[in-house]
Length: 417
Image (tube, rainbow, N blue to C red; front, side, top):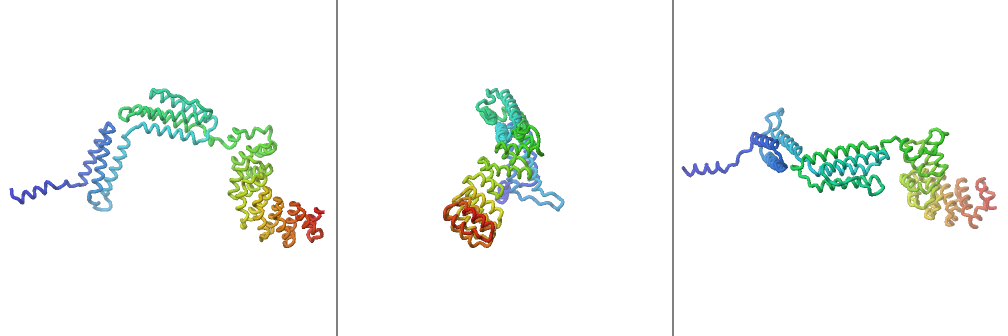
């Protein structure tokens, strides 16, 4: 053999096999056959490695493009078939014990995060009890419905935690214990179906929800229609704040909302502080008025933020009045600043609120308003406020206006005498 022939032979021996669409297709079909014949997780792992190798070669290969627009691209066809093969591989895997534990955790989370009716809780107890029985039969373990604690939901979730721990402890192998795992998954499906079917609070109509909570128990007859309104009146009369708040929260009705808020304003209950403060944070004027009737200092910081809301005079007026009824010392200077506001109604309400607070720091600015304001209604409010403060200096300042041009100012001055 010549040196030239030997060199050619070496080059031929060292040349790698060319990757073609046909060779890749042959490998794909061979992998499909091995997947069909696979019996263990180890077999499936080998198939997965072969798919990864095939994908790498497809990515690296310089495959021809389609001859015309009507033909499918060979590389895209291979990519699509490999994806389908990967999906088939995943379908062949398992089932795993981890899947069972995950299903139990999902049911436990749903039980914890859902509000259930009394009937629903009873149905959940039956469902979890039945699931535990199935688990005991399948795994031959000794667990039961947890009885510790009075809260039904806590007992059920504790029981399911025990069930999940029992499955993990069994250390089930997907090859050797496949039938056991499949039976457990069937049991968890029944568990989930039972949880889904149990009666939730949201399954009840509004009327049913209120009936369960005793809203209508005060009615021995219906005097005013609708009965919800009649019940509201009775609850207000009896001082049942929680029922008024329940109605406010539950009814999706402007009519009932209006009457609930009016009832709370008349009642001024401490129990309504938090829900009204939440509403006040959204500039709810009715809630602000109720906060004034409650009289707690807690809302003051929120209300002070609205003192300068000049673009919303109605919000300002409700805020000023509430601050006055609360009697907040912190509000004295901010309210005094509003005695020179452009809006005469705002000036008038600021004066009256200062009178409700009764702080002597307000005397001088109120005296100035009484003497100089262009609106007699504002001057009358300042005179009223000075009478409310009631110190000798305040009363002396008002008493000088017994012959004032404005009847309302005269009336306040006559109170001093």
